[in-house]
Length: 279
Image (cartoon, rainbow, N blue to C red; front, side, top):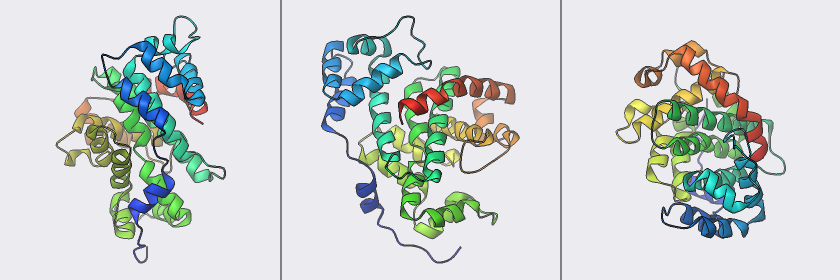
């Protein structure tokens, strides 16, 4: 595909990835403390009107199917729980990274794919009875944020790279051109935001989960969710569903075609709403 293009990835991350706002840092910190009160978290959320509106909208969305309408922040925190509040805070910040005044069609597709993978990863994790379904959502949402940075660096070059079919996988081609893979860059973004190390690990290994000795189940969940989203036509590349069903990750998780189709159907019912919430 031509000569390697030199990029200063740390400079690119600093330029393109927004820092954590003080209010978001405060809420995220409180939400990780099991002993903190609902009122304290609600008060912290109230300092950021945009975040407050988003949390109320998520709390009333089909994703959490509330039994009654959530009308206040204390109600939202009580109904969703600390872990989901933390997830929404990070998801809100991620949505800011994907959004800008002149977002390209490629970036729009990538954002919709990321939300789809997040929802599917959450459903897979929940169906398997795994702890950390909300972490699965975040891993799915952030798994391709490295691609966003490579697109911002040179969209035409990256599109050519994605469309190249030379018998090698995407990560190999990325490393040859940039010196980094999108998965490595995504892990660096997770560390830039000081997210838990298991999230960075899952992002790093989501396309090669067999190579990891930590967060392997999460990496496999994201790997399958990524494949199903692409097979359903939401993503930068099209693959066949059967390829996902036969994959090492699907077999390791003991997920067959009917199960995956049922989980995707559940995920896709919330997709448009979640894209709207975080857009």
